Image (cartoon, rainbow over all chains, first blue to last red):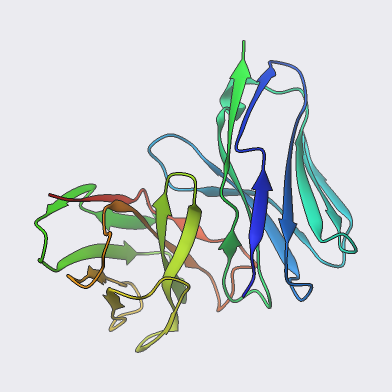
Length: 111
Length: 114
């Protein structure tokens, strides 16, 4: 089955700086790559996603890039703010039926 | 308010006992999922269901059972056969039969075996 690796496991950045989280997937048939944000005591929430026919997608301060050849995708957060502190999960899906998640990145924004 | 309700928030179980975790959604979503979350391991899929009276095993189904008798409800039973049941359990649902429009998660149930 699909396997998704995520790095780093923890990341601390100064407020206002950028943060980048990277994931690699194993199955070249994967065609959908969402990112979820989990705040303390809550379930994960979808923040951005990308399909395999697109190389990059932006939504205000967050962006996702996909390199199908290398089988990796990344989350970029610019101008980080304290409310960006959370655990972020990448995921991959083959045929949109179910999601395989990465192991998560705990992002801490330092004021 | 539309959403997914998981209950209870905290659950304690004695070894050797079965326990059922509740998940109800009023979003009219077709698909529902159960994930287990352990530190450093992310979310792992236990079972999922795309329609009533049908469900499929995920990656770690051993020691768990589910039912889907109603569209709104997808309870998970953790049986005594589950070797290491202490974990945080998350239920999710998605519209249609796919995750393309996003999976909506509940707030989770933390199960502790004592």
